[in-house]
Each structure stands twice: as structure tokens, then as C-alpha cells.
Image (tube, rainbow, N blue to C red; front, side):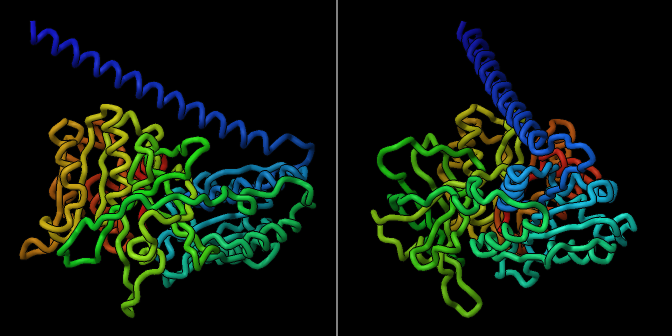
Length: 462
């Protein structure tokens, strides 16, 4: 009798999880349909007028948001527009468009964002002669902390010019999200259409307002560590009003008291149901030993109980979306656990057990962040597999990419046979490239390209 009850309960749990996955899949199907409808609405048929191409390459969503706002401005001015990610663009599309605007960010030291990885292969070859009839404008997003600032945008601009395309204006380069550069971009759109100055201001000018959240908790996670101190930070939302909503994978922007023009992005390590935004922040040090402004203020400067100017940012490139119904392989190091923790909390809440976490840090004794929570997930069956790499614990340095190479057969089984999706969060230098190399060695270039195109390989690296 007891065994029968257990089978009934297990079957009910499976049924509930299946219904949840179906609901998520339906929601994402509806979102994609709405996006297609929005794109179609921006490109109404006009006799003899080819829609202006607005192409974006975006890693964290900034460039995509700006591209869509650009398209809406032009649509309001009566200009039909075709909005698409750069991976949906090839030489034939460019030749047929005749006119194009590019809003592209740079990933790391000059690389293409993941949704432009396929297009980047075009840039490695000589540009086609068909580009000679193209007129274009380009906005490049970058971060001056990297040596190859706006490297991908500059590479695209050179490729277009070499192919004979004619720029309407010199390419604009923007460090982070800079209001002055965006105003200049809007002015330059006058080369394309006569904008309606009475129209609603674009979101990059109006923007979601920053709100005063409260620093409710801050605790050191790694006392005694050889690395920089890492803090768990909890921020409580403003009192009153509607409860803030976000999804696992989303970001927050934190505005510093002395640098309001350059907010910093952080991965959210909690769910909206938790009622607070959780962050994992390491006190960063520059090469000259001075602390990073944002991390220093969050970890030591902001007083407990004090206000932190914050706003939520949807990060579609790192959300679960269709992958909510798939097994997940979650890979990260250091404070990259934040974005992975958000997903694991979402999966635990949904009763989804097919999760594999690969996490790396320096020493198990000091740097196993949220060890108790991870152990509880294992005990409850929410974590099917856990691989750890503590690089300073042995005679040889071992990293997460090494754990992936050791488990190459299991990795292929999860991805090829079980249809798993892969999420990577953490440091760009060393980890992200090492993981990418290990994945390509195990799965092959063709399959990795397919995973990227289908949204089953997603990264939030910095």
C-alpha cells in the first residue's frame, strides 16, 4: 500500500512538472509570436520602399533594446523597418536592404556577441561586391576597461567600408550606456528619416527610473580566502507600490552616488518570490591596487540600512525561456554563481531535477559559496550532478573546463541524447574561453553553432 502511494505521488509530481513546462513553453511561444508581430508592425508594405534594416548584436540586451527603440522612432516617422539579430543577416540580406543601421556590442576583447557569432564568420572573409550599394550607420557599444574597446563594432565598420558600403556618418562609439552618445545617435537618424520631435522619447532617454532600495543584509562569504573578499548582499525593494518582478537570469543596474551616468550591471542571485534582490559581489582591485568603485561601495561603502539606487533589467539572453523544460548544465566560477543560483532556485521551486552544476573557485574550505544551499539541493534531488574545481587545493591547478573535459562523455549524453541547454556565468578572462574550448572539443563546432543559434548555449560573462 505504501509503495502504491509513493508511485501515485511520484506520478503526480511528474504530471505537475509537465504541466508547468507546458505552461512555460506556451508563454514563450506567445512572447515570440508577439515579437514577430511587433517586427511585422514596424515594416508595413509601401510601394517601391524596401524596409530599412536595423540589425543588432547584443550580449546583455543593451544593444537589442537600443535597436528596437531606434526602429520605433523611425516607424513613428513613417519609415518601414526590418529588425533582426545580426545572425539573421547575410550578404544577400544586406544587398537587398540597400540601407542599414547596426547597433552592436563587443563581447570581451573584441569578440562578437553570441547572437552574432555566425555573422562573425563573414567578417573573416573578404566582403562581397554586393556591399557597394549599401548605405549604413553604426552605433558600437563597448567598455573602456578592455583593451579592444568596441572591437567588434570597429571590425564591422572596416568590413563594410572595405566592401564599398557608404556610411551616412562616422561610426559612434559608446562606453557603457552614455546619454550624450545616445542623443547624438538620435540626431544622426535624421540622415535616414525626418523624426517626429513630438513623438514619445525613446526608452534610452526616458528609461526605467532608479528607485531607492534598502541594503538589508551584507555578509562576507569567504573569510580567510586567498582571493578578494566576496559578499552576499540583499537589497529590499522600496516600500509600497507593486512588488517588483523579475525572472532568473535577469540583471540589476546599480547607480553609484558619485557616478550616476555609468550604472553597473550585476546578475541577480534570487527570485522575485524571495522578496529581495540577492547579489554576489567581489571587492575588485585594479592593477595599481585601488579598489573598483562599484564593488568597493557595495561591499564596504554603502551603510547597512542605507539606500541603494537600483533598477531591474530584463536579460533575455540569459533567461530560461524555452530551456525551462530541458535539462540544464550550469557552469561558472567565483561570483558567477549568482546567475546560476537564480536558475537553480527557479528549478528547485518548479520541481525540475535534471540540473548539473559545474562550479570553480580557489579553496573548498573558504570559497565554496552557498555550500549549505547547494548541499540541500543535492539532498532533495534538485541537483542531479555536481562537479567542483578548487584550483588552489592540489598540486596541480584544476578549473571548471578541466572538469568538463573529464566528463566529456556525460556532457555529450546530456546535450545530444537528453537535449540539455548550457548556461555559463562568471569571469570572461580564462574561464569563459576555457569552457568554450572544452565544449567545442566535446561537442564539435557544428553542434556548438546549432546550440548558439537555438538559444541552448547562453553566457553571462564579464
